[in-house]
Amino acid sequence: MDYAQNFKDLDSLLIDRDIDNYSIRFFTNYKVNKFSVLNSYYDVKFTPNNRHGIGFGVANKKMILDIGFNLKNPNKEETARFDFQGTAIIKKRNYTDLYIQSYKGFQAKNNFGESSVFRGDMRSVSFGFNYLYTLDEIEFSYSLLKAGLLDEDDKDVFITGGLGVFGMFDYFSSDTSVLSEIALEYFNEQADIKRYQGVTVGVMGGAISYFKIKEDIRAAVNIMPGVGVMSKKITLQDGDYKPEKPILYKLDFSLGLAYQLDRLYACLTYNNGLYATDFGYDNNYRLNIGNAKLALGYRLGQPNKKRKLKQSLFEE
Image (cartoon, rainbow, N blue to C red; front, side):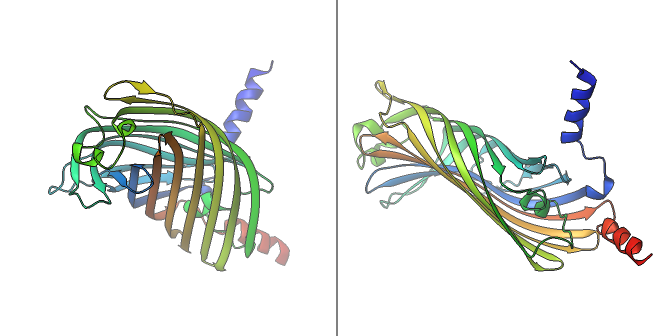
């Protein structure tokens, strides 16, 4: 086996050596990992505080790496959190993203008129991945828009689809029941939940689109629905059980808008992942993973160097 050749192939997949494809960036973002326990009539939502942040990063054709810091509100209880979300495109047809999230401390809200309460004992952990193989090359689609790599040769409209897989681990717990004594009056005994965990594998489809609004303005819209099989376990204050229905439904969608001026660019993106499954006994669970970001970047190389080179060769 030629290990040197294998390493070289892997290196070419992950490392972009063209300085024209790199940019440094500063951003402000809004991240949230919120979930709900609900039945046919009532809903209790758990939402983290200090959802806004600032940060910096680096982007190229193959991946975007951003490091953010949360902005704390001194008038609100703090949610302790670790939140990593990343996207990469490998060999132009393999769209992948990864998320790792750990939150502790949630604001409990409801739709039956009771006051919201901050639950510092509540913890949520989620991590997973999405992988989509596309019918056409997508290296100039959503990820390049986020990286500020706008090419004048792009098509005015580009739409393609793909198929893929996803997997996730999801967990939440509290020292006592996640629902307060007042909230439990609106639910049944099986909603007296102290801990939940679930592992999912599934299949997904996707539609990826990209639009040239003007020469220096681009937009993108991606939609990726999926369905998976989930192994779930729910621990109550007294006992535990495994829900009979194993199905989990998900819908991921992304919106993006970018503007480029020579080496400078601005990019506004919004990503949202919705996950839904059945807890049994007329109780249900919803998870919402969202991320909005405004990034201001500076290209390290000449944005249109390759295009200008083509033009000069043609003129000669």
